[in-house]
Length: 350
Image (cartoon, rainbow, N blue to C red; front, top):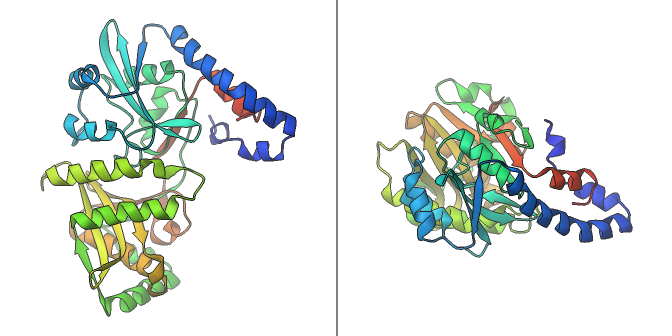
């Protein structure tokens, strides 16, 4: 399936008639409500029970399902707690036994797993990948995971999936030699400007809070709505960093660039199986003339290399990433939605 089927038809709505917009306003909620009711009835063998608030029933189900590698159940529970953004929890059972527990956060007109933007590669706890796929199809609502999944998501038969170019730095090779001459020059200039009066700091809890708050401020006006994850990010990462050990399979670290005691840029990094993922990369715009964004990137990459990691993943999107890394495939996004809701997108009613 192509990514084109997955994209909102906002452009079509903007160019469409007033009649179509009015029709969408009336018809879309009715179709979405009907899909929520009908879809579970047509999914054989899977029963979905919805909960608006986390409770002891969900606790017991979570304890019965496998934990994620490197993230125990108590840490995962941090993502299920209430925030200012609406959440719902779907418990899937088959033959009376829990098979998946899908906690969702509301974003625009759809839902996303609570782990999205906080724990890369995770959708929800399930007894098996096949059980997770069956549960996602039985929900009757639209669920999107924009990025961070591996190719195994294709086996879950999503309505749509895509694999954009992601950018990766090979830390075991001469990665600087792969940078363009202009980029190497800009990196040197950024280091010279910043290092005259700034310093790098690793793993200060206050830096984590500053990075999350700064990320929220930078992106709060963006119509993509990604900042619905801001509260979950801070709560989860803070809990994770308090409990992680040096030999744990998954770790989170922060780097901050400081002018005295003032933070000018920072990163939150997820480290797993020799790969460092830049989860949150921020800067103070008042220091843009010193190129603090370039300096914190260079510092994060150097830290990852010195710690013995093999790759630094930058993710997809945003042109600046092309200057740092090489394009690689293998990271996916996916959408699960009922057929009726897909029809609304194709008709330009959503």
